[in-house]
Length: 181
Image 1 (cartoon, rainbow, N blue to C red):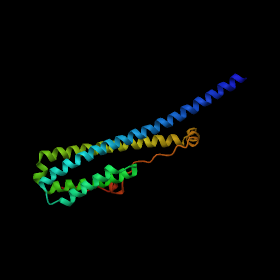
Image 2: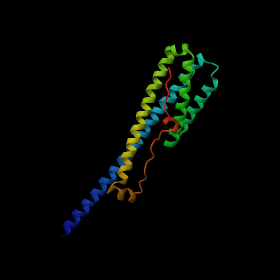
Image 3: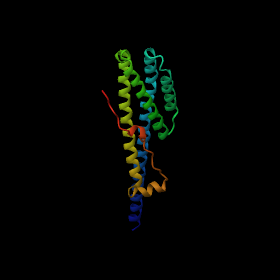
């Protein structure tokens, strides 16, 4: 009889251990996914000075725009939480759209090989940021789901696990995009 109690206790302990570890793995995946967003945001902030210098050569009078890009880049670099990073990222995205508008106004700039390459790099980086955000949010969904399903909900409560924050799009990002030719 005692052997069955010991076996049952070992089985319960192993089950709790398994559930706890699965929550920890999900939490670590969130950290890894957030670091991938940081990598892509860093890549973006490294590209921006090059873009600004290229555009400055063609449009010296657009000084305010370039100063705004520099300011938004600094905000992105100094952001700490996912919400701050999302907000700074959104503000920088809006400012970068202005730079592309400047390019539309200056045909010589659009034709510059350096500008075309930088524009391609920024477009590639934006795609990578979008993927990294999607990957992060998928991991947050997985983790938050683990915290709420039975029997994990008991383990999560026992060890005080908290829900993770999604990397949300701003209202500005959700607006309809209008393309005119």
